[in-house]
Image (cartoon, rainbow, N blue to C red; front, side, top):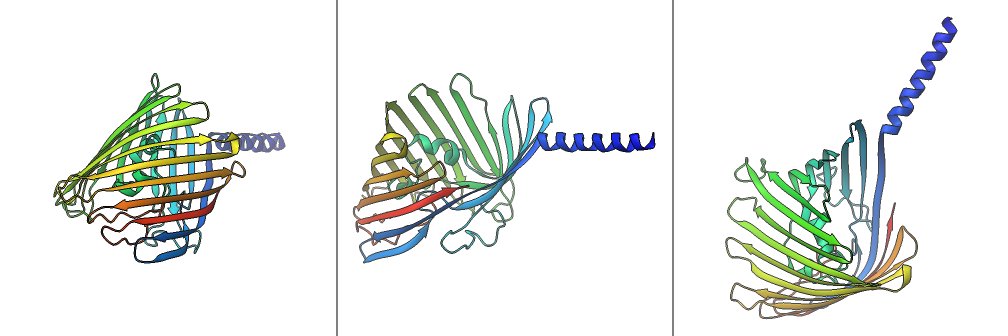
Length: 341
C-alpha cells in the first residue's frame, strides 16, 4: 500500500509538471544584422562596418502563461547590441529595448514597462515597404519619432471588422522635470480590408527638461496589386518651442520577384515650415533576397538633396548617418546580411 502511494504521488507530480509546462513557455530570440557601408556627406567619403542597417541587432526573452479563462500573462525582455563588436547598445541598461509584463485575452492586451511605441510597432509598416527601416526610407531620415519609452502603460484593442487600435501613455520619473505625472501620449489606429490598408497615429512627447513638447501626426495608405504594393504617407511634426516645424510626404512601392526577392523604391520630400527654407528631398531603394526563412541578404541606397541649411543624413535602422555640412547633399549604400533566431 505504501509503495502504491509513492507511485501515485510520483505520477501526480509528473502530471502537474507537464501541465505547468503546457500552460507556460519562454522563448529566446534574436536578430543579427551586419553590413558594410559607404557614405559621403559632402566632407569626404566614409567606408565602415555597421550593425543594424536593416534591422536592429538584438536578443531577448519572451514568455506567456495561460492562467485560465482565456487570459494570458505575457512578458518581454530585450537588449540591443552591435553584432560587429558585441558591445551593448546601452551598457547602463540590462534590457534597453524592452522590459514589460502584461495581460491579454478577449478584451485585447495591456502592457506595463519599457515598450516600443504604437508608432514603431504598429504604424511604421503602413508608411512604406520597408517599415521605415534602412537608409533607403525617407520617413526614417526626415522624422523625429519616439521609438520606445520607459514607464509606459499601453492597451491594444482586439481586431473588429478589420479595425484595430493601440494606445499608450508614459509616466515621468526622476530623470524628467517635473518628476511626476504623464510625459508621453501615443495612439494609432489601422484598418485593413483585402488588399487595402490605411493607418494614422498621433504622438505628444515632452522633453526631459519639461520646456517643450514634440507633436507628431502620421498617416499612410497602401494597396496591393498582385506582387506589388503601392504606398502614400504623410508626416508632420512641431516642437512647441518652434525649433522644428516640418511636413514630410512620401510615395513608394515594392515588387516581389517570386518568393525570394523584393525591391522597394521610395521618394520623399521634406518641407521646412519654420520659414528658413531648409527643405530636402530623397530617393532611396532597398533590395532583399531571402536565402531562407531566417536569413536575408540586402542592399540599400539613398541620395538626399539638402537645400539652404538643411543637413539631413542617411541613417541606418539603429545607427546615425555621417555628419552632413548644412546645404550639402549626401549619398550612401550598404550591403549586409540579417539572420534571425
